[in-house]
Amino acid sequence: MTDQHENPQQDDAEIRALLRDLPAPEADAGFYEQALARATLQGARRRRHRRVMTGLVGAIAAGLALWLVGGALLQDAPVPEPGIPEVTMALEEPRTVNLVFSASEAMEAATLTVSLPAGIELAGFPGQSEISWETSLGEGRNLLPLKFVALTPAGGELLARLEHNNRNREFRLRVDVSRI
Amino acid sequence: MQWSETNLAFERLVRPHFDRLYRLAWRLAGSKAEAEDLFQELLIKVYGKLDDLARIEQPGPWLCRVMYNLFIDEQRRFTRHRLQTVDESRLGSEGIAGIEATGPAAHDPAASQQQLEIAERLEKALAKLSVEHRIVVLLHDTEGYKLEEIQELTGTPVGTVKSRLHRARARLREILTADGTFS
Image 1 (cartoon, each protein chain N blue to C red):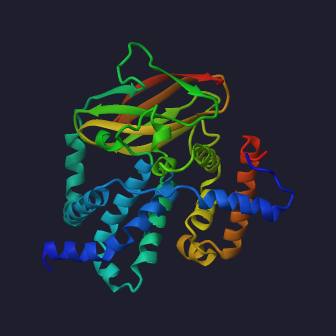
Image 2 (cartoon, chains in turn green, blue):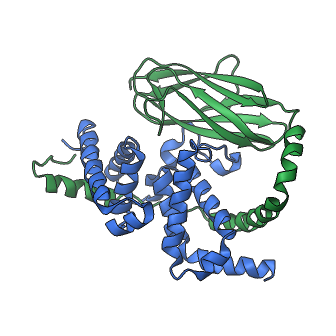
């Protein structure tokens, strides 16, 4: 598409021209207003919470003893499949998979661990086969979009494990990689 | 000050900087959902610092620094928020088949097909850079930040910024040559 140049400055100019023309992201209509409204509500709530937080932590933890988490994976057609769901990815093409967690109650400080088969990476975490982080779930359905990249055509099984208050639940996803 | 007056004062101070902050959030986070989370988190944080904000002569650079620090903090906390769950309704059509339509390239319907293809390749190449290199090259070459502004924003010395910029461009060229964008 573009001729290669031996002159490094010329090369730089081409790269810079591509970067300069990268489309500018724009917020959806109404996003700023929603963000402002949430900030003023939550900001005020945080101020109040700071004053009473210490005494409430124990009570909140006890109140979360009963919880139930279900999982499903949204694919091209958002229909739950029996058994282990599958997704097909193209080699080196980032794809987003939405993990769906249904929680009967809000959960703070749940731990989610994703174990990846060889040759599959989570975007932004090169070379890591297991990624773990703390998250919180609201009551009801929670979506976690994860962007994966297949570096080899091997595919395999991806495991997501959610842990909270010494309970855990595992979700599996079969990943096939096409060469196209 | 009454709550409604506080909100009005807050809005007057932050709204003029929304577009720049949103772009910065996107360039830092790399996706719409994560950019929205970062933008939201910034507003919530600075709402609690309204008194500080009101005393600052140039709120724009200060807000950018707070956003950058939020992003870095979240990275250090192992992406607690970067990978946090989001409301289903906020994802719109984003799904496993919708990722191409949610990238920044989708915001310019007038661009030619070839430009869109190159932009997609460039986005993929950028995703392969380290966070430090990606941020520097996007802020400088795409958003037009000066080296000194990047130093002020990130706390990274200008010499290091220059070095990262050079390496990021070189790496981008390598990737784009390998995928055929440059022949």
